[in-house]
Length: 356
Image (cartoon, rainbow, N blue to C red; front, side, top):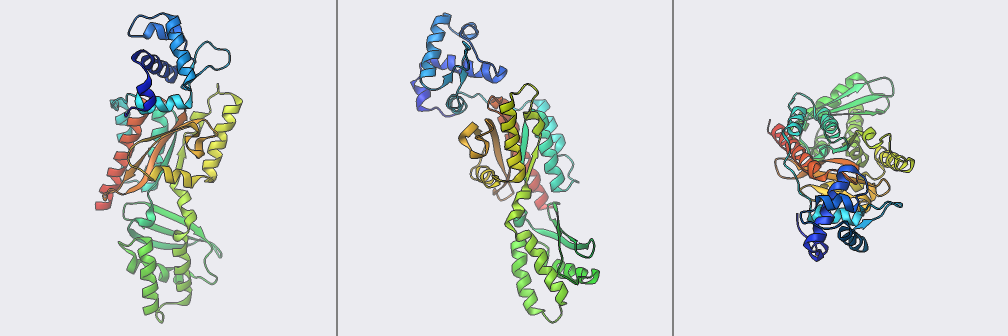
């Protein structure tokens, strides 16, 4: 991890006191006192000396004193400084690796099911909540399309992508549609769809309809326009976010105000109010990123942290992300390699499927 100007200002003793205090806090969630730190220090120092260092760190805005406790906890600024300058990231342990590997072993599942499993695994392994941003399938090659009548005024549009991902959309078909017109529309689309993305298919449809207007039934033509519009809708991106493990953040010992904040966070995620924020932070840079508390608008009220990493396709293009949400006292050193490994594994799996 790179250093920072504030870290460089600290002498060796201050740096060790700060590092040991933050590590103890991340492990216990409790304020850390000078006596605890004195026992852990490399050099022999008195509790009074450690207290003086803690006061200096508090003056710098890196620590604060909750309530009337003699102990200190890191501030958000302190946590950011620790993560950027002093965090020691551990290697992924064998047990965590085996659990993640087991999640993605079944290549028979469609992509949606696989991503749901990834979210459940991340949540279970980390005891936090997970976010999985699934691939942008408007950019994936199409394998097959069909329309399924469900009644007089309802139908299902089904699109299968080459990586095994399946999307279903309920919609109101244009009036007068029959099973025959739905078959005709699907046959027309499948004759030109294979290997094309949704955007490419739309252009091809315009060309084909213009050339074959006399051959194509008017009802089928209306259905084709309606069906393709379903997947070009911007709101479709909201279905890309999978949230799992909400209960992990609502512990029985949490204070009422914290419970309300966490519930607000998940309500917002489920309503997709701030989905654009998550899309932006997940897709704007490579590698694992850590957002602490109010550093991102999406998590500012809940006092939560997010560890997130994008994953890429075979062309090294970012197409989605995986992440873990937890309290700001997350075990960052353990969570970072878990998220990083999961993102790399998902990216490899999607790349391999794309070659099939």
